[in-house]
Amino acid sequence: PLPTMFRYLDALLLQCRHLHDKPPQPDLICPICSYAWDKPPIRSTFLPLTPCGHWVHYRCLIWRASANHSDRARCLTCGVVLFEWEGISMLTLATRTGLLPIENPALQRNYFDNDANMIVTNTREAYEADCAVIENTIYTCFNEEYVRTDVLAELHRRERPRAMWLKYHTDEGLVLWEMLVSIKLKRFIEENCGWVMGTDGWKQFEEG
Ligand SMILES: [Zn+2]
Ligand SMILES: [Zn+2]
Ligand SMILES: [Zn+2]
Image (cartoon, rainbow, N blue to C red):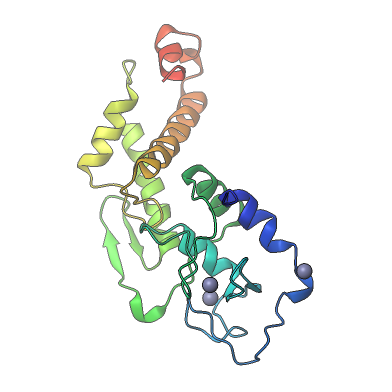
C-alpha cells in the first residue's frame, strides 16, 4: 500500500539525510521548477524520491502536491505514484512550513484584486487576498442570524477562492475551503461577539 501523504513528505523522504543536497551529477536540474538544483530562487533541500530515485527540491514537491491536477501525487519524471493524496494534510503541511510555490517570473501575471483592494503578484499574495475577502465577507454578512452557508454563498458570488492552492475542484478541495472559512468565522465570532457563544445559534454552528 502507498504511504499516506503526511508520512511520505514528513518522515519517509527525510530519512536519508546523508544524501540531501548531494546529487550524483553536479549539474542536475529540478524537473518541477526547471532551475539548476543549487540555484533555485528560494533555497530548498534537493533530495531523491522514494521509490524511483528521481531528484527534486523538497519545496517543489510540496508545491506540486498542492496543485489541482490528477498527477499531483506522482513523480514528474517517471509518473510513479508516490503517496496517497490527502487534502487536509496538504493544508497542514503548506500552512505549517510556509511552503508556497516557487514563482517563475515568466509565468507571473500581476493584477489588481478589487475585492481585497491589493495588487497581487504571486501565489502567496493571491492567498492573502482570498483571506482578506473571507474576513471582509464575514464582516459584511454577519448578524445575529449568521449562517455559515450565507458566507460561503456570498464568497462564491464574489468568485472566491482565486489563489491557486485554494482553488481545488475536488471534494477535498471543497472541504479545505469550507474549513478555512469556518476557522475565520469562528475566530471572528470569538473576537467580536463573545456573548454569542453558548446561545442556541452558536451550538448549531459548532455542530455544523
Ligand atoms: Zn539512507
Ligand atoms: Zn525545484
Ligand atoms: Zn521518478
